[in-house]
Length: 329
Image (cartoon, rainbow, N blue to C red; front, side):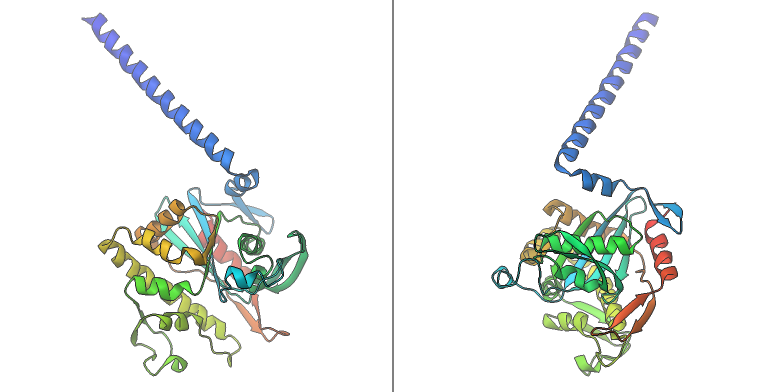
């Protein structure tokens, strides 16, 4: 009887070892497959564990991923783009938000950056190589390159340099022309106004709720009062309000149609440029719907009248506070 028990125990141990070995082999092959398709540069980017500020290293959240959203304010199709010199385009990075996914706590922290932020921006040569840097508005980083991947990478590199060298995982750029398309896919987006915007219509009064349809959504996120020096800050507040309201509308749309994320991607695919796969984009959208979206962090600063453009000078202490809150343990 004892011998039989020992045999059964031995078989159980062997089964556990074989199962463990199988999982190990599977994981190893999966890792090898991923490494074979990802450049060393990207591997280095993914596995940075800390960010340095004033000589001190601060550990980053362990189970975190990031996506830089780049909204361009002027869509140029391929035919028109070919008429412009290949190393330059007219698409400004009008909307810059980093989505910081904390997968352990299932939260997302949006990190918003003012388009007029003055910082070191790499400029590209005709060959697509970095020729140096120049202090200018961060929105101009996207104008270097073809308007596609190279412009997105230049924008991502600029944002990374601004954030003390912190590395971002992925980027997704979209023309602002996608706003009315996605807006109407969710059946319209209702926003409760936090300020008066008479230029958009008499119904745009502080405290009122307005349901945006079609181009009204695009006008709402694009509008800024050019007569006010810091008018872009009010527009950024509209961006935050719209993103929050759109996410809620999208959640309701997905509850009715589980394939909404896929349909939405296909509807705007031609307006997108990203290093994410279709599956990753779908996962990101689903996570945005399932995860808790925390309040947006946005560094403060001061606007000045520059030459020829308005300049936003970010407060370093505020910037670090936002980086620490969004990215660090």
